[in-house]
Image (cartoon, rainbow, N blue to C red):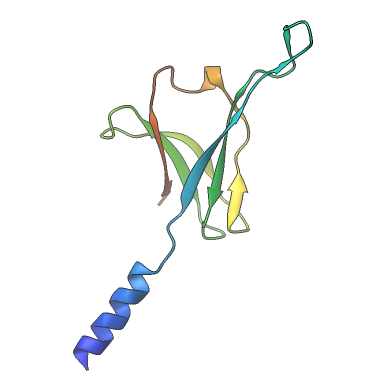
Length: 103
């Protein structure tokens, strides 16, 4: 009986969906002369498989050891899109992004 209960708990814990993050690149618009206009480009974060009414944080790191908070958010549904982050608001070098529960 203990083995069956342990197996059910393990399957239930493994089948839970983890929150995921996707980067959406927004390029600056260019007119027919090749001159840029409008808002500068940047990125959006599309977050899916999140639990409603829980606070999440998007973090970045350059070395996967030290993580810095970039954006805190919560959502009513199971997916959301962040505001546009312009390139000058982001870290200047290559980096990694992740989403974590902010508790």
